Length: 478
Image (tube, rainbow, N blue to C red; front, side, top):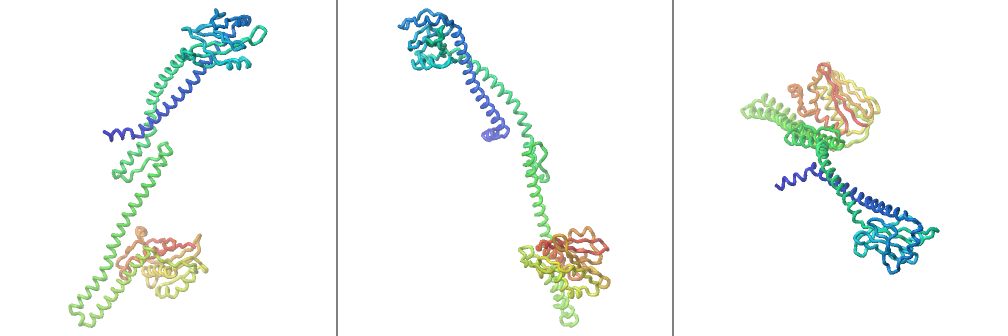
C-alpha cells in the first residue's frame, strides 16, 4: 500500500499537476490579496468622497451659526442630516461640538486637538482616516475645513460613519473572488490533465523504449523527433550511448572470436611441426637411425621443422610485444637512403625476378630503422613468394604525398580476390595454405607489418585483382 502511495505521489505527472495547481493557487491568493487592498482603498475613498461632497453642499452662511453651540457639549438640533453619519464641529480654539449622532446613537470619536489644528493650515483636499471610537467600533472619519461667507476658515467639520457595511461589501467581493478562484482551479485541473499528458508523451515513449531495450532488444533506439528539444537531445545522447555500447559489445565479441581463432590457429601451427618432428623421432626409434641415408633425411626434416617452429614462436612473441606496449625508437631520417642501402639484400631475395626501385631522393620522416626494415622485408618477401621465379617483377617505390610519405610494393603475381582483401592482415590468415607452408609462411607476416605501421602512426592498404598482381601501400606521417 505504501509503495503504491509513494509511486502515485512520486509520479512526474502528479508532481507537475500538483505544483502547477499550487502555483495557480498562490497566484490567485496574491491576486485576491491585492484586489482586497485595492478594493478597500477604493471603497473607503469613494465613501469618504461621497460624505465630503455632502458636506460641501451646505451653504456657507449656515456655518457661522455653529460657534453658538453650547460649550457643555450638548447636541443642538442639526442644521442638516446625513444618513448613517455622525457629525461634529471643531472651532479654531479646538473646542469639540457634537452636531449629530450616527445609527445606534454612535458618538463621534474625538481626535487630538493638534491633529485638528494641523489640518486648518492645509489645502482643503479630501482627508479621511479610519479610527476606533470609545466603544471600540471602527469608523471612517472625513475632516473638512469650514469657511464663512467671507472666505475665512472658522473650523473643521468631522463626519464619521461605521465601516461595518463597507467591510460586508468587501467580504462579498472576496466570496465572489473565492468562488471564481475555485472554479478556475477546477477548470485548470481539467485543462492541465490533457496538456500534461500530451507534454509527457515523449517521456512516456522513452520509458516504453527503455523497457524494450531492457527486455533484450538492443537494436531499439529512442525516437529523436518528438518536438521537444530537451527530450530530443536526451534521446540522442541515449542513442549515442547505446551505439557505443553496441559497438563495444560487438568489438568484444569479435575480440573473443579472434582470440579463439588465434588460439586455434596457433595451436594448429605449433602442432604441425611438432607432429612432424615426433613422427621422424618415432621412425628413428624404430631403427632408421642405423641407416645413414634415412637418418640424414630425418635430421634435415627435423631441423627444417624446428626452424619453422622457431620462426613461428618468434613471430608470436613479436606480435605479443607489439600488442602490449611496443618500444619504438622513432627518429627523423632519410627513408630513401635506408631503402637504397637495402638494395643488395633485396636483389639477393629477388633472385632472377626483375626488381625496380623508384625512390624519390631526400624523403624524410620519423621511423624506427629496424622495424621499418622488417616492414620492407616482410612485404618484399611476400611479393617474392607470390611471383614467378623467372618471370616475376617487383617494383618498390617511395614518394612524398600530402602530409606524409608513401611506400609501395607492387608485384605481378596472381593477385588476390576481392573477398579476401578485408582479411589479408588477420593473423594466421592465408589464402593458399599449401603455397604458404611450402615457403615456410605462418600467416603472421602481414599482421606483424600492420602492427608496426600502426605504432608509427601510419596506414597500410592493399590493392589487388585476380591476375593483375598485388600492390601494398604504406602511408607514414612526416
